Amino acid sequence: MPILVTGATGTVGSSLVRQLVAAGQEVRAVTRDPASRAAAALPPEAEVVAGDFGRPESLVSALRGVERMHLVAIGESLTTGPRILEVAKEAGVRRIVHLGHNDPSRDDDDPMEARHRVLHRTIENSGLEWTHIFPGEFMANTREWVASIRTESVVRAPFGDWTSAMVHEADIAAVALAALLEDGHIGRTYVPTGPEPVRRRDAVRLIGEAIGREVRFVELTPDEAREHWKDRYPEQVIEWFLEMGRYLDGNAWVSPVVEEVTGRPGRTFARWAADHAADFR
Ligand SMILES: NC(=O)c1ccc[n+]([C@@H]2O[C@H](COP(=O)([O-])OP(=O)(O)OC[C@H]3O[C@@H](n4cnc5c(N)ncnc54)[C@H](OP(=O)(O)O)[C@@H]3O)[C@@H](O)[C@H]2O)c1
Image (cartoon, rainbow, N blue to C red; front, top):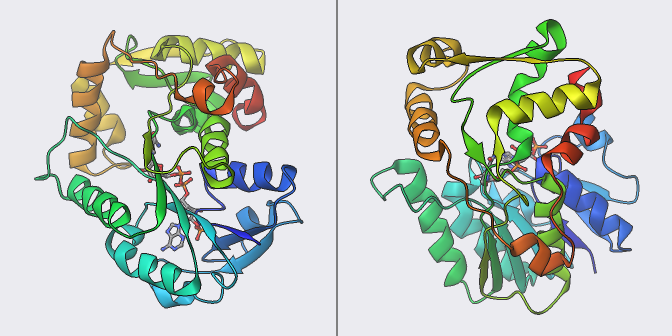
């Protein structure tokens, strides 16, 4: 029986597709654009199918014969999630592994946070077997630095001492794989992080070591960061980054989830940098 992976061209979903294929599972990979380069990069064993969260009915044929699925909470699925769940149940889905986000420091007045929480409750009340996966910060977020490292060997960012136990996407995917294939994860909420806290300036140094040349870290003041990010992110997101930066300065929580669920320690940031060195060269 195929396992349906939504978000299959994304950071976590593409790793999940590869891990399911490697485990010998039949995989159906959903994308809005099966002709895209990201879809073409998926393993040939995966069946790539079209589907759009904005039109839940577009998932009907992708869901045929599927009992287990991975749902990424992103974009339209945050609002059409309840209908996606109905369509999935009608098709015969019994288990859903949900990759999303929960930030207990933000309240329901935050519209994005509120949407995530509605989806959490809808999944929990759906009658399906469910597992929530709410990871810590992704190591892959440092891909924001690709352009300046490639062209200038420099990273400009605030809070060099910002400390975060960032998590490798392959470890998030490995937790999702276990929740899809094994029975001990139903009704659980997992918060996978990386195995160790890493300061921003050390992440920059580790990328430099992986690519074989020094990368300078230039620390920005909050006002310089606002200017630096203004064309890239909405103002509200920038203020949230800065608030998080102050909070995470010197703080980082390491979760035991990856090792507990997969039986292996989480991958380090040095490993992530080596895995992605070609992107930064
Ligand atoms: N980044 C972090 O630090 C962090 C931390 C905690 C939690 N999270 C959570 O992680 C999740 C994001 O995972 P990710 O980074 O792996 O995703 P991603 O790389 O941003 O990829 C997004 C995926 O969603 C698919 N998608 C987007 N809109 C769609 C639509 N309308 N219909 C169908 N598919 C659609 C895209 O597929 P196509 O473009 O091929 O259609 C793509 O595969 C979010 O729930 C986020 O809250 C992230």
